[in-house]
Structure formats: C-alpha cells, structure tokens
Length: 493
Figure 1 (cartoon, helix red, strand yellow):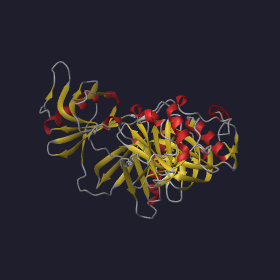
Figure 2 (figure 1 turned 180 degrees about the horizontal axis):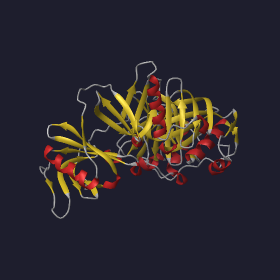
Figure 3 (figure 1 turned 90 degrees about the vertical axis):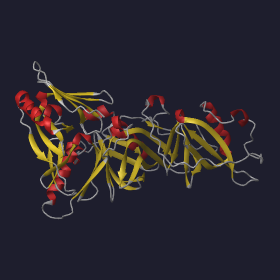
C-alpha cells in the first residue's frame, strides 16, 4: 500500500498530485491529479485512468469520513447526466490546498457536510436530477445514481425494491458490491403520497416507467411456469411488465439473452422461454429464466397500439391474428428484436421434440436442440454444445429388463448433469442425433456395439456427481447461427 499522501504543486503549472486515494467508490488505491482544466484519478492496480473536465463540475463538497480521512464529493452538470463521483482518503492537510484550487481555477466553493454515523436505517429521501439522496438526521448517508438502477420491483403500496446494475469491472474481484436495496414506508397517511411520487419519479428516471397510454399490447390472465402464477403482461417499446397477484416485475428487452419456443410433450401447449442476462428476484429467490405457457388451440386477435410508422418498423400488423402461441411469440420477436430458437431436426421415438426424463427428483422434458440441451421445467437448464466436455450413457431400472437409461452431460465448468428415467426406445434416435453433432461421446468406439435393449448385465452402473444446480446463462451468440429460428409465416412447428 503506498504511503505517499502528500500533495505536490509546481510554480509554473497549477498541478496538484496526491497518492493513496481511493476512487469512484471502490477499494483500489491510485493517484489523484488536478490541473487548471482537468482532474482525474489513475487506478494503481489496473492502470485505468478516469479524467473529467473541470468545466463540467457544477458543485462539490467535503464529507468527513473518519479521523484524517475525507471524501471529495463532486456533482457534474446536465451535459454529464448529473453524474456524481467521489474520491476517498484525503488527509486533513490537503483540504485547504484543494479547496483553494477549486475556488481559484474552477470558481467552485467547496462546502463541508457531515456523515451520518448513528446507524439508523430510517431517514429522509430526496430525488435530485439523476440521483436519489438519503439523509439520516439531516446528515449525508448515501446516494444512488438512477442510471445504475437495473430494475424496480414495486410489490405493495409501502415498498419499493431497487436492483442495481453489476459493474463488469468488479465481477472478477473479491470486492463487495451493493446489488439491491429496499425502501419501506410504514405509514398509511397523507404523507404516503410523497412516497408514491418517489416511485413514479424513479420509474420515469430509469426509463422503464411507461405510461398506460404508451402500452403497445396487453395480455390478460397469462399462465407463467416461472415465476409461477397468472400474470397480466403489458408490453412497451423498451420493456414488458408482469403484473401478478402479489408481485410485479419489469424486464427490459435488452436484458433478454435468448428466446426459445418449444412444444410441451404430450400436450397442446407451447412454452416461450426467456433467458435473462440479469436475474429477476422475488424476495430471496432469483429467476434466470421466464417461462410463459401458451395454448396451441386458442385463437387470438391482438390489437397493436402504435403509430403506422412504428408498426412498419416492428414489421407487424395493426391486428395480429392466429394461435395464441404464434401471436405472442411474433410480438416478442418484434419488440425484443430477437429471433426465437425452436426445435430443429431431432425427433423422439414417439415423434416428439422433447424426451420425458428426470433431473434429480424433478420430472420434465429434455429438448436436444441443434446447438443446445434445454431441460424444463424445474429447474430450467440451458447447456450449449460448445460447453460440453463429454456425454455418456448408463443403464438404470430393473436389472433384468433395463427399461430405462441415463444421459450424463459433463460441463466444462466441472458440473455433471444426469438425466434419468429415459425410456430405452429413445436411445437409438438420441445416439444418432448426438453423433451427427460431433459431440464427444464417452467410449464412442464401443457405443455401436451396445444393444439398444441394454441387456448386458455385467456393465457397472455408477452414479453421477451430485453438484449444486447452477443455472447456465450462456454468452450472447449470433441467433442466425443458432437453432432453427422462429418463422412468422410457419405455424407448423
């Protein structure tokens, strides 16, 4: 850790340089420098440089953090989206020099403000430009930039939950990161309207507070498998909202990593699946996927509330007509600007797209897509073929009959997924499909010698590794290279 905490100036150039300063709310130390036009901070660990024009600074203040430890808190103007940055670790001896520099060259008078240290978890809020400030006993506690808000969950009248964006630069560090904060207003009185105004203002600030008049389409009483329940779905230009009996969710289309559409086995239902970059939360439960169940029997006529120009840009019609699963998928495809991945060439022994099987104690369907394995419904597992190390088969069931077998997928992350209770009639078509994809099948040289009825009683049966379930969220790939894409004109899936 550097010990240099002294400031240095030049008689010819008004430059101040101070080491051992933490920047931008992180734990890394670096050097803070100021001239008559710029100020900046260089991260000593990563060598990243952050520089700001002094003309963009609107005001600043000192906040006393602890003994001989001060924070320089700077607010920028509208040209910088009212950004707030701060630098920690200034000793008392540097305060006068920096304050005089701001006054002389930037024409900004640095004030002083006290930090709340009582430990209370209640106080007063104030939304100013793009920042939410929270004060305790009229002293500074913290502030949140609304540009860093990923999602707002407004469950009940007295609650608001704010999910914050994850800084990609901090994901590979051991640094603690604030990911969620909840505000609660316990009183049902006239002052509660101020809290409701805060909700509405935050929705507008984070650009997800679309008004009812801007709703492009609305779907009522739609069953969701994940998160489970019936929801009203409101679709806007940049987001869609799920309104349930107890919980509401707002999801930005940009948060959708992949979109898949698969038919349920032995059913007239389809499942529309969204793989999310950032999980949605319901209390302590996280959902990396959203699953919407849609009928193949019900017809739907859906009016689109948009201008003619927008309808043309979305490549939609004023009224969408067709089967429910087709209409909803076409609408999401247009608004999210992503093609839905559908099953490709594989068919089961019963000419279905999905294999009935079990994962641990849960039964479901395993879909061998052209570039993925998809298991639904609980838990939802999406595995890219590129992440598979090996595949292997094992016999299960009655030792004399061997009616069932297991498929074991070993992931490059060291996780093994074992899908059990697969009927032996599925072995031949599944093996042929996997070979066509050039996947690494364990003991592939002997696979062809194994009989599909698995009547060799001498083979040892081993159990797969019991790993904790980790939902696979694959990196974004070019949808044009994925499985067959959803065709608006083709209803025969």
